[in-house]
Image (cartoon, rainbow over all chains, first blue to last red; front, top):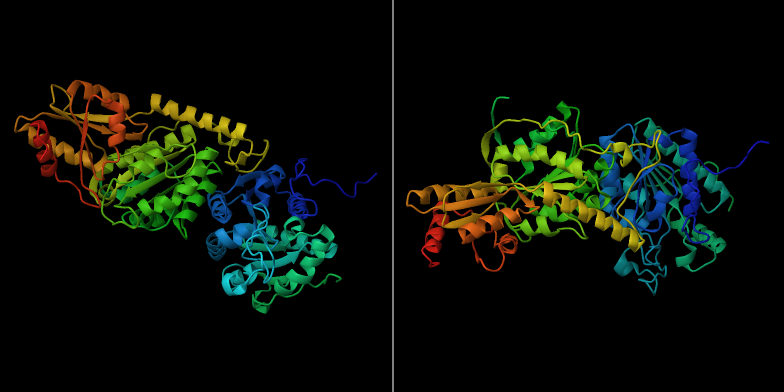
Length: 264
Length: 356
């Protein structure tokens, strides 16, 4: 009998602490599958965030560092510079990366550090209980924007792919989503491309993945997937912002949409 | 090795290289930017790595990431920068990793000034960052000693898997003195890095570097482990020097770093007048040489603490000598360095029984 589907070797057997319907589990699995396929588990070092994925080291069967809030890109810089032979990735949420860690991510990207960032954007602070994030959409209700995000006082949500793409150095910048099976497949391709570019020591690689938070959005998981598609994608367009092999054709501000568009 | 005339900051950089360190991450700040300037040139020559970080927060967290791979790593900064590094220092101590931090102290609080001071004693020895942790703090008083203590610091950091702080002042960093580099023999008391470092789980179970323990019983146990380590320091790592303590001094001075050198000159000056003064110079500020201070204080009976601060070390000296012997204090702060004459004048009035 041939096994068609199994547990990735790079994931431990531990049960995750994520809420029902949360897409962190899917994204974890995609990263683990890519590490499996590339055969790099024994030289991979992950750097975890503070936030919902703070316990990520329990789920990956690779060496892991737990960073202070927002500082994962700095730890990854230190690890990758000290040991350029290691494959290093950071896994960060939107509060961690786009708020408290903005300085670290912008400068690590701008130095062209040869590691990979998986940026999980669910437009809210999950672990602390649903506060407004830099990525919270205009009008979106959170515990610290009870009347909806007011752009007059909180400004507009930060688009990290677009922001990083204004820099000349970062060469691989993509935004994907995991709200549909088609996009999950696309996300895995993007993650794989990022790790491959790192293995080739070519450039800094940044994969933003739009994700859901059913608990703090206050909706059932399937409705949350639909909400992501209807509300997040119009503001956070999916696609390839920069790639070192087709840089000339990309402005870095308007993404090239995925070839295999998901079925709406 | 022949002696070489070097500026303190450059000698500190070279000492790290001679000790085998190949990773340095830093952000410029006066009065220690020469370390980065020196290592920006020198690190590539020896195949090492230097990154000019975007901030002290980032520099210290780069140290965290590099230390977690088991490689030797250090950073340097000055007072306001060390305040920013307090975050990573606490995490590194919690995660039990070896790393070396250097603080070339300038006057504070706040942006303060850029001239030499010793006003980070409390930050260095009592905390700085959050949580139940300690740093092993080494205080050089000459450029040669800065070199020697830098080399020792890497060894101690690896032996105890804890951040070690070399606490100099602007004078140590900026002054030129002849130095020689004598790296200590390779330590034989260091746990193999594969047992704890995140350097790729090849042929071993994965390693996790973290300071997060959500179960309070586990965190408490971890903190007891740390505390036991700090107790071992008190037993095995206390370092100090004495000057002119033989015979029957009328007064014991306690001073460290640059201030101790000024005191030494004052003591020589006073000898000519027939006033005998002893000096105890702590080299480890934590663990503090409490037993040695107590023993000399008991014998001499009178103690004065001299610092380039408002008297941050006085409470440690007072705690060491107990309530029966009063500890007086003399110091200048904000970048003012007491001259030997000023110290001598204060000693004279103290010895005669009337503080002017």
